[in-house]
Length: 254
Image 1 (cartoon, rainbow, N blue to C red):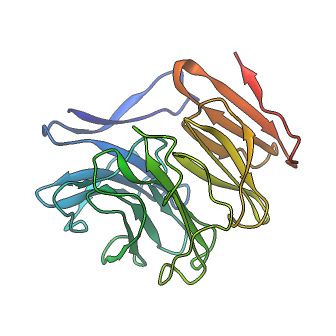
Image 2: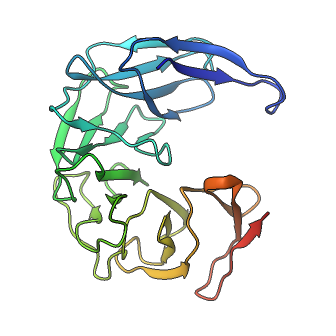
């Protein structure tokens, strides 16, 4: 507290304050834009509800969507990678939670109504739960996470769904450890990263192999340049060129 949203119109040279919340509980976990104009920001619970912010003017101003989805006592979201919230152009919003509960919250109407799915992910402590989720379609989804205070924990750290979240299954070869971000980088290819390193899957998350051991917090696909970019603490940047192979290497800067 206070919680800020800043916007730049000149590629980061200058920044303007577009939202501020001075409540002592205010904490923004992530932002996801459905298109160039409409975006959603997710905040930790306040007064028993997750605080959801919405913009319809490219982020120049934000309003609170009320009521936000109900939050259980001790439930929150993780800002480790900013990808505990995802959206698409059709009005879907997905949120992954942690703490006392590991849930996927889903809205099909831009946040007007919500449904909840409780998962078997690691939960119960403030350091445990879903840290990142991704739905490549409205049916195909993946969540990753674990326990950032016990990043060697192998069990219940990744789940997959092929029916929009009605049913979830474990990978055949799961990620080994805690991972804070997952991203799709090509057809059937996924990448996940965290303090235990970076892993790859070539079959929609069913089997994972180790790519690199260095710690990162977030990974994203740059799209047009066919590169995967990772970022971690102390300014660490990693770049992986596509198409990825099992012998691919991450280039580090600096």
